[in-house]
Amino acid sequence: MSLERSDVEKIAHLARLAVSENELDNVASDLSNILDLVEQMNAVNTDGVTPMAHPLHMSQRLRDDAVTEDNQRDHFQGVAPATENGLYLVPKVIE
Image 1 (cartoon, rainbow, N blue to C red):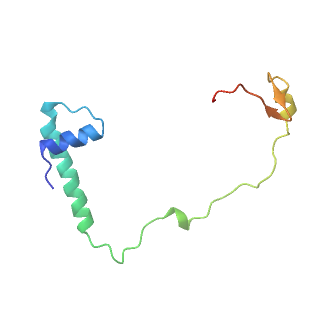
Image 2 (image 1 turned 135 degrees about the vertical axis):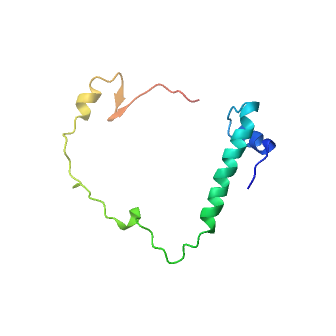
Image 3 (image 1 turned 90 degrees about the horizontal axis):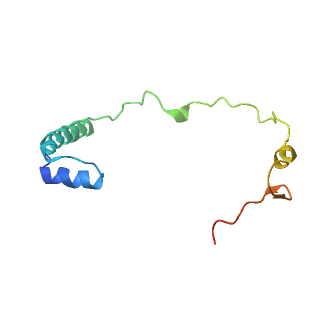
């Protein structure tokens, strides 16, 4: 697939990339090469090829769901400017 300068200008605008006039030809060539490589990879027949690794086939080592710290809510809320019923009170910021 061959990209023209106008295609690269549109892509750069959409991606919010600053590409100077003298870089357009090089960027167009590079992007065309990348797209050609993607086309080659898509053309390869991968039927019957098993994936080498997949994260869903592995089991996660999980830690025990156990409390490891003491409840210090009263201690932390003791230094808060305002609390009520175990909740922090903050100024209203959205009307």
